[in-house]
Length: 189
Image 1 (tube, rainbow, N blue to C red):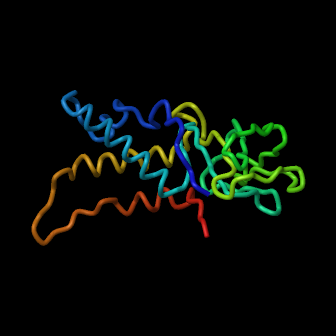
Image 2 (image 1 turned 90 degrees about the vertical axis):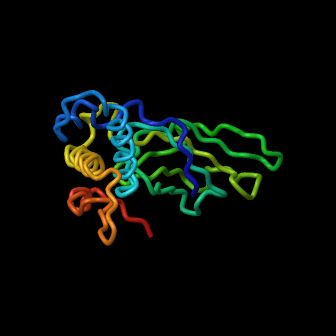
């Protein structure tokens, strides 16, 4: 199932002021760098955990409905199904009522009886589901452990930017970040 980001988070889980306080920077010269590091760290934590932190909209594309009528997303947490559409053989989209689906937010599953779902006309990318993922709209909605992982990554990357020594390797990610995010990981087979 392909996933396409439609709308990115409106804000980051950690503010520039929070990050500056954590890394003990008391000047404004590096604010743009720190903001970029925060965005990169959020993306990294989201990739490690397969979880969207702040609410964002994604489009999931499938060729056909699963035989049991249950679509389990590989990313979470599921907040809402915004739109569903199916394409005919000519590539024309038809909206499907979102009320026809039941959301199991705890398991990240979108379900409907298999017999109630019309089959798409085109063989490839015949179904599109637009969903909202994320813990919430505010930074405080994100679990504190994940916010801390972002702060640790920002500090590590800020302190080690441009450090390359012959014969020495600077780790891209401190091992503590793996330990922090480990319990939030969504595994996929």
